[in-house]
Image (cartoon, rainbow, N blue to C red; front, top):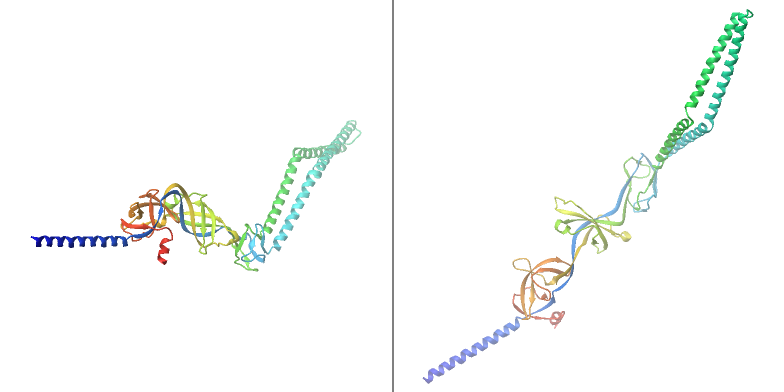
Length: 420
């Protein structure tokens, strides 16, 4: 009996000692498994929806200057890379024949102008006065011839004059009457054609001569090639002495005082874009320009299912060149009072999607799946999964198990411990 009691006591003692040792080992293991993390608090803040895309740069304006006439190039006044201003003379074509045509047309114009003055101030009054004088003279001649005829007829009846003389007087009277009728018709014609009508005809001749003169001047001006824009000479495909053909480019110009970035943006991202939205362009060498959206195409490219968007920006010192590939960042909208977490808190869930590790008051890390909205450079909008005020792991969350015990370090503490 005593031996049995002693054996039981020994077993109990050994069992109790083993349990205590296991508990100590478990506690030690748990203490060693505590992860050191850094956390940040989820807050309510505004966040920007920014649309990023690759784009190609174009000049704000470009043009190819063509000749309206065919003539050899006499001289060039600009070279490639030269800056030119609006209206600046850039080249001169051979124009001696055109200069002579202008002189000829000017002479014809001056002659028509002189004829107009002569018609309106001299010719018409003189013609009218002469016609009136002719009628008066013809009337006097008729009166004299009638009187002579009547006298001879009386003398013939008295037997004092031969019949032949009477007939001669009658013929003279008929001729005088015919001349009077002709003079009267001429006078009536001058009176019926008004002075205004004659002046109108003379003015038409002046206008026609002026038009030919202006046409010759225009042809001569086409021999002077002037810049239609302010910009830079980008190309000069022909040389002095070569023929400049009508319709073919002589000089190409670009204006890069401002540049336009043309980007193809997916439909879902383009929905919030409007002309006037703020944007930036960033070149591969780190250069940056601030601009605005100027065009959002109303049509979708069926091949790429994208929408073409133009961003225009001033280009100081002409640093960015057309043809360069740049990154455009367009501020589509600002969302106020959003639930915002640091972008560093987002992890990829095992089954896909996003998750965060939330540290509760129990010092355990709790895995929570989240639905993410807008992402900015260093923060993201959380649509579902966590609330404002919760603490999320931003350092040490990778590989952290759900419900793992953690200890929260202050920023920089983990680095300090590592160095120690």
